[in-house]
Length: 299
Image 1 (tube, helix red, strand yellow):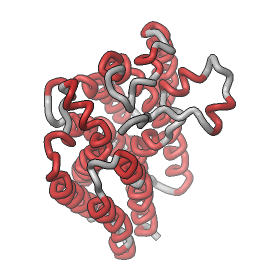
Image 2: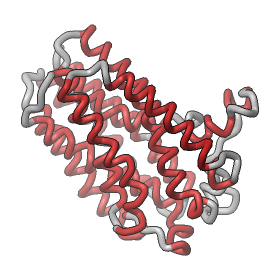
Image 3: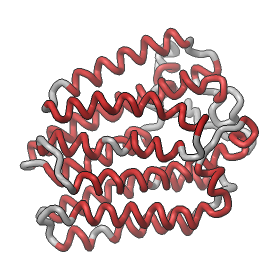
Image 4: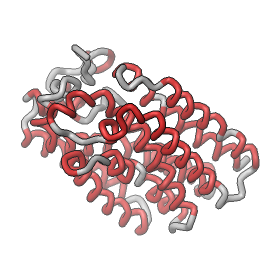
């Protein structure tokens, strides 16, 4: 895995003034896939519960901006906790905190700014959504610790990234009803699956420094584990959709994300970091296909 890194300095990032570059990299703005994956469970909830098109569009824009900001904030928190470990892992040693491009105090100041933007967005939501938004901060802080104490840090990431499902549900509908439980569970199982694939990029380095992950836990049985995780995710999403009066076409179109999940399982090569990254990124299309199926189900 020589030379494999998650730092990208090409494209629009290369045209930025040098003083902004460390903060763009710190918030992972150069790699929007994380913001997409944080956004998608909330989008599913909005598609299921929004009163009308304009109502749904408003919350989609709010959640889109909020996902970029809070994903950036989560990355800062993660990198503050992990800066020493990141320096020992090939893929992450070039990150701004691990490499010394940014000091911890500078990172904390940047984090405060991101949280202020997130708070401004949260204050536009109803009280139920505000409470859920504040509660999510506990998960954001605890996730980086999980890899130190449990073989299931991906489950903590699932709880965190999947939180957009109940948050979006409460924001668009005003309260929670039973389908949100299955929507949240579906998101959690899906996230554990795709982040296990992602974690295989670091499996060798994680073994050397003692970091736990489901990639190490499942090892050569990852494909079987993904069958269970993705299967449960798919089932939970169908149950959540059954709580609404969707046209049968919505259920038929769930075949599309289902095929994309199966494709990941079939194509998985846990010893090929580039393949793992490509399959991980494919989950943006999985999430968008779920949202499209829900929307068409309302037509």
